[in-house]
Amino acid sequence: MRLEILPVLGIGDVTEGDDLAALIATAAPWLRDGDVLVVTSKIVSKAEGRLVDVPADGPERLAARDEVLAGETARVVASRGATRIVQTHHGFVMASAGIDASNVDKTRLVLLPKDPDASARALRAALRERYDLDVAVIVSDTMGRPWRNGLTDVALGVAGMPAIRDHRGEIDPYGNELQLTQMAVVDELAGAGELIKGKCDQVPVAVIRGYLGGTRDDDEGARALVRDASLDLFSLGTTEARAAGLREAATLADGPGPDPADPAAVDRAIAAVAGVVAPGTVFTHVTDPEVRAGLAAAVPGWPAPATGLVLGAPPAPVDPADLVRFGADLQRLRTALAAEGVPSALLPPPPGSTASATLAV
Image (cartoon, rainbow, N blue to C red; front, side, top):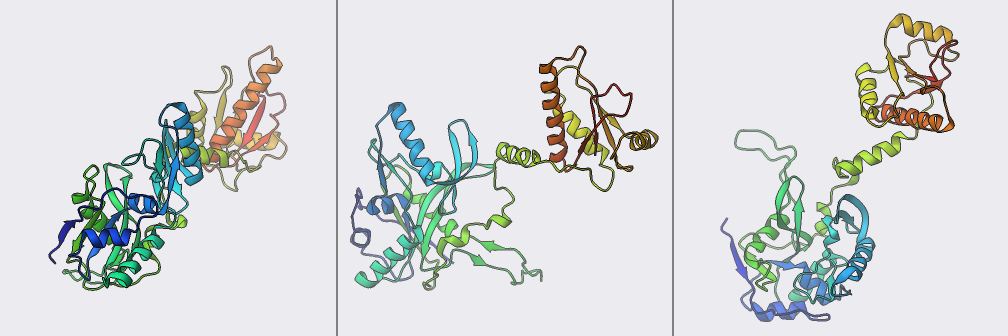
């Protein structure tokens, strides 16, 4: 395979209502059947009127941008300071939902196309019907990647070719059957097109020649690139995943598991809260079989096989504020236990004990 990447020069500034098919066909009369057009999503958005008016600067601009971002966001994936990584309503995970303030007047923001696949299909159809050109169209935009610095262009919409080349079932030169290999070829082509489009050169369209033997309609489009939520192992940022886990852990099952808890898990839970509990709150992890048996005999409802936690009383004399803090410490510990997958049950202390409470885990 021999590929050529060709710039489409002379398109100029695109405004709402412009005919992209006419602009591209006029600027590139040399287009051939089988070419792949990589079209920057920004000119698609401009032509479709996906623009929002905002103040040019100051806190009012930031507030307006935040409001626009909220409207384009299906869910927040990660947040650090002013940076928001979100999932758009299309299903794409992007910084700031792809909202862009470059190559546009300072009083406007450019949103992503409402339906990039539909935009790609419409442009492909217009070029075929009006200019007798059978080309594939990729609508591209710039994204970051987890765990890697730098940006690259990827496909948001596609028409005239499948988004993915599926190699599963093929046999490699060593006789191995490929099991998982699915190449996001439209992302690779989008990245290749970006090499000559640039960010400041006003070249919003590139043509890749030599990849396709022929075009093919595919109704699924770039939606095929969006990973199903059930298969997403990294659906949240680290901080957000931890917060979600703690929220779920706060819904505590009232009762220990059928088997003794893993002592290491219990120790990790105690260590997790050690730095935030009030002075004087002591958690004693009971693992000795004879002591556990004694607790089971002395405390009503204590399951005999359960590992025990004895919670020391706050320092005397006890005042209401101490009891509130102690109750908060108890809840922190139970949440940390649940986060480790260890259920717990709050029970009264053994008769004659100086402890304030016991946990069966």
